[in-house]
Length: 288
Image (cartoon, rainbow, N blue to C red):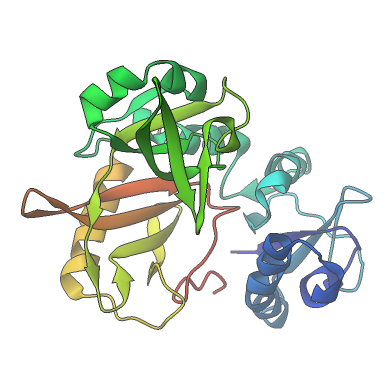
């Protein structure tokens, strides 16, 4: 890897270390988590900054960098993804992920087989046809937006003479358009699964795959948790199967999980996310 690229609105790395400037806790958390990768990339001489003000690529000393032909691992917020990937492409850089790749990863369920079935629809259509979804899934089902926004178990409840869709987000109960404001938002609906838990919480793993190779694997936790050998072998097998799908990108982030299916433990893909804007857990070391 030639460079790890991070956008900056100030032209330097202060955006990652001066955390007091962020009132939004999610934004502050993003920059805090990125600190380690930024420092490691700097130490290895592989840090590349994308100045959002001037739309130029620079090094840590604000010198212009020619990225033509260079292999680049972009890392950014979701909102910056399209802008950053477009700039890398327009300047001749060889990003491990393109805008076209991100679109395919977003619709991964159309290309990759898993053991459960998805219904693709809109949030408004779900709300208008609660009887249909209750008959198919019961009074609880899993609903997520195709673009990263909402992802949770939803429940159908009887309210006087009508039914309503509600979900607990944290300790708060939300319903209707408080969950997703736009009824035309594309969503996926599937069964509410019983994810296996152990002493460390839900048995979920996040894997970063770069150019077809497993880059790093972490339990979905901020604690240091060993990966059981059988889990790693299952992940390896799944990655090999994914590589056989010709249309699918070679760099991506994928989550795996174990869930209970009538007494049988199923190991399967949970979801994919575009590699440039996926969050990291304890063992997800990206800079080498």
